Structures are given as structure tokens and as C-alpha cells.
Length: 266
Ligand SMILES: Cc1cc2nc3c(=O)[nH]c(=O)nc-3n(C[C@H](O)[C@H](O)[C@H](O)COP(=O)(O)O)c2cc1C
Image: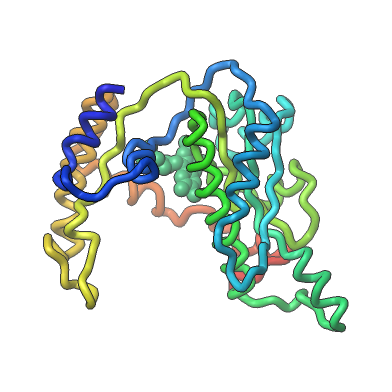
């Protein structure tokens, strides 16, 4: 915990406005090990009810959440996600889904169909699910829970849909492991604020504005972080991570899989 506090204290904006929410965000870190303590149903419900207050594009509320506690289901989801242990071992797994079924119903009663929906529909429903997911994450943290989002469910979107019993027009955008923390990972550094924030026009930053300088500086910072945690890395840590993640292209079948589930991303 002292590491977390010192990281917060070392922020250059020591005199900047702050609040419980801001402090919560500054100490947020993905946690992948949980105690055996049960996450009570009322706790999950409180978290999700709060999360559903998230803004939603044109009030479409195009999300659904599947709460998974069953060991076999978690094991199967872990398999899709590349055998991620924390998915199998998490006390509770929340699947944040984009859900167009209710919009379909609304349109049908007006004599129309959503079957030929376009990319905008797919995008806004995914954004809606993401906003609810992040809100849930923060609500959970405020109650002492920790977790990690799981994009690995999109390794095979169709198989994930099958495991969760999702109907057509619903897909799992990402999942979330949630539990009481059994580890205190160090905060992973972020890219330099002054390189990422632009004033009025893109490129007008108060730090290095070119990608090459920003990436070079972050490579060093992240390598330092990884070495501090005992993880083997190279000096070009982030660049190498990104290259190996996206070359060859990741989840190349996703467009076809989402199309089969009723989402048109083209
Ligand atoms: C949409 C999304 C999907 C993610 N998928 C996974 C995942 O499948 N497995 C995992 O261990 N972490 C996953 N993460 C966590 C990221 O790896 C993590 O947030 C990032 O490395 C930054 O670390 P931090 O959250 O500890 O600051 C995901 C995060 C997001 C936002």
C-alpha cells in the first residue's frame, strides 16, 4: 500500500484539486489474484445498479451483463481467453455485453427491422457496454473489490456467446474478474501527460508532441517498471509488446464472428 501512496504523492500536481474519486482512479491497477471471500450478490447488484447510471447513447441502454459464478462456465471462458488463470479462479465474472435485442423489439413494433443495422449501431452499443463496465469497475473498487477486464473473450466471440447462452444480437464486449484482492501490484506507469494532452489543435502539446519521442520515453519508463517487478523485458518494452500484439493482426476473424452474432462492423 505504501507504494500506492507514494505514487500518488509523487504526482507533480500535488496541489491540484482532488477528491475520493480522483484518488481512487490514481490508485487503480488491474488485480489478478483474489481471496476466497465470496462477493455477495447484494454487492454485485449494488455495483451494477450504480453502473447502469452511466450515460448511454440516445438512451439506447443497449447492454446486458451476465453474472457468472459457475466453476465450469468460468473454466470454459478461461479457455477461450487463452487459459487465463484469473478467469477460472475469480469469485465472480461479469460479462459486459452489447445487446440490440430491445432495440430490435422497439423497431419491430414500428414495422421495421434492425437486421440491416450498420456500423454505428454496433459501435454505440459497444461503447454503451464499455461505459457501464468501467462504471461498475469503479463502483466495485469503492467497495474494496479489485479486478481486471478481460478482452480475451473476443478470442472467439462466437464460442463466448455459446458458453454464455447469448442470443443473436448480443455479444460479449469484454468480461471482468472481480474479487477481494490477494495481491498489491505496483501501478503501471502511463505515457507522459504533456505528450498525450493537446491544446485546441492536435500537435499543440506542452511536451513532446511526436509519437517517436513519446514512445521512446515510455519504452524506458515501462522497462524500468517491469524490471522493478522482476519481469524480464527489453529496453524497447512497450514498442515490442505492441508489435508482438498486433503483428500479425489480432483476432482477425472478429468481424466475421460479430457479423454472425448480428453486429455489422463494416
Ligand atoms: C478492454 C480491456 C481488455 C483487457 N483484457 C485483458 C485480458 O484479457 N487479460 C488481462 O489479464 N488483462 C486485460 N486487460 C487489462 C490490461 O492489460 C491493463 O489494464 C493494462 O495492462 C494496464 O494495466 P493496469 O490496469 O494495471 O494499469 C484488459 C483491459 C481492458 C481495458
